[in-house]
Image (cartoon, rainbow, N blue to C red; front, side, top):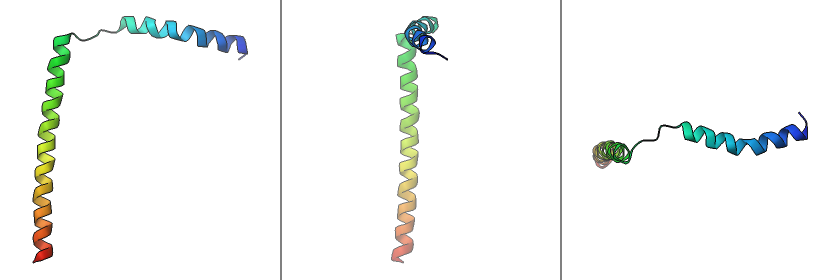
Length: 67
C-alpha cells in the first residue's frame, strides 16, 4: 500500500464513521431512563446479595478462628 492510499483512507474515515452513526437506531429518552433504572436495580440487588454473602462468610471464619 502506498502513502496516497493510506492518507486517502485516513481522510475518508471520519466521513464513514458519521455515515454509520446516522444508521444507528438510537433509543428514546424514556427507553434510556427505563433501562438505566433496570440496570441500577439489578446492580443494587447483586450488591446486597454479595454483601450478605460477605457478612455470612466473614462471621463464619471469625467463629472458626476464635473457637
